[in-house]
Amino acid sequence: MKQLIKKLDSIFSKFIRLRDASNDGICRCITCGTLHRWEQMDAGHYVKRQYMATRFNEFNCHAQCRKCNWLEQGADAKYREFIIRKFGQGIHDQLLILRHTTKKWSRFELEFLIKDYTEKVKIMLKEKS
Image (cartoon, rainbow, N blue to C red; front, top):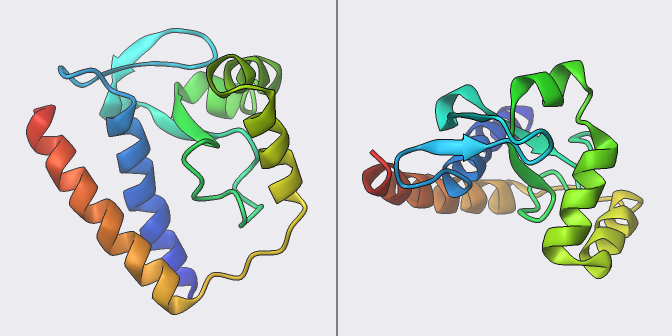
């Protein structure tokens, strides 16, 4: 199962960074606003990856520069502002509630998500190359 989660982490990260990139492949960091190519960004999680219930939640993950994601440890206060501004207080609160739920991914779920996000990434790579 760990290998499947690792594989899903990789493809989900590509999906998030491509989703947040412009047609020319440029992403704006959601916490500091710097611009980088999608390959040079991270897929930063508002609720940290250790919480499996939100790990692959698209509301919880966005393109973030490596400085903010690693050196600023996610820049939580700015990330919180972004989530509320973009999606509203309700989504923010749902993410925090989900953080406290237990999620055990089945092999079927992980394999399905890997296949689904792989297809989405293929499409976006063609659109944004």
